[in-house]
Length: 334
Figure 1 (cartoon, rainbow, N blue to C red):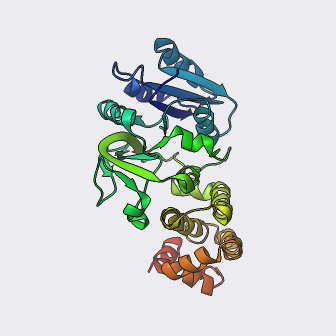
Figure 2: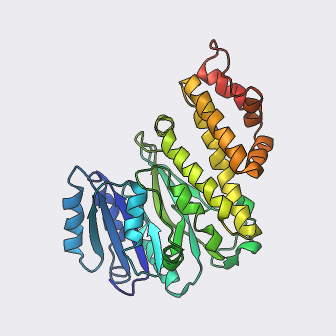
Figure 3: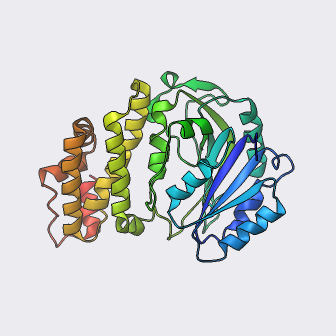
């Protein structure tokens, strides 16, 4: 599938309940010869393979399937990315979908666009209520190409759901996500940024991001259970920051996003973990690592987030046992 404008990588693991909702949203006469939809069957144990290949047979000029051993979300993103020659690359998780009409508008725009990133407004959709909520950046002009020095990078947020990258930017700088690891969307957001010079924002809502699924990785219980995954991602970004060459605007964006990830990481240990002693130990170890490997970020989060400052003063000692977990959360978040 040469000379395509946009490749959509669709990581798919045990995706049978979702494929028939997701894939048809990419099929339209105005898209079939301008995009390629790459379904990556990441070692599924259900009939994902058969369903995916059904679509590749129905639309052989648009849909193709990569069948591989299970390697996790990052592995599937990598597999699709390094198998395409399309001008732009976008990730859409199989349990999400797109607005077809606005996807057509996006592809029309990408045909003549040369920005490193195109960031589109998107919707979160509650799987229980069906209610949608718009997610967008404020105080920007849609359709205009910005250089980073023209943006308030500290108030900017470009999520995996909004992002369409120029493919060569990712491929030529060998941007690869960790395998067998959750939460690598942080890597997808931050590791390319030393090479990003231009961004264009579009107001058309392309991505429909389903929320409210208890099996999602961002569910609090899953977050705590997969602490080691989040820890690997955080460590990788900290190591990346040691050698990344960035101007002040690139650095400003990366640090503004990553400080919030750091805050979340402390909370996973010291607030959300019901095993208080385990959480304390995790926070102590991470705090020492951050202090040694990025003193600047260590000092910054300690001054900005008062609950981290309090925890450090206590050497991450848990609150008295008579307090409930909710009581601890309320105290720390004062």
